[in-house]
Image (cartoon, rainbow, N blue to C red; front, side, top):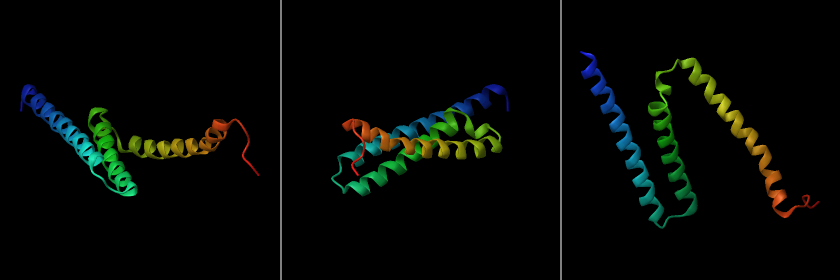
Length: 103
């Protein structure tokens, strides 16, 4: 296979992923206009957002082409950062009222 055919096949993959991400976004809009319970809506939206973000990271940020070790190092680091961000939320709620928590 020459380089032009290989490049064309590579671009086709990106177009398919792009259309897939657009379809997921359209599905999110459809779900947003349905009158469903809050917890069910949250679960649907989170699942779609995780899939959409995963496709974007894996294909457009070329994470699928990296070594497996990098992927296995990034996942725990991301979880750690998100957990550390969770620690500061209580301070942000306290600062809304500019006072300490009641005892």
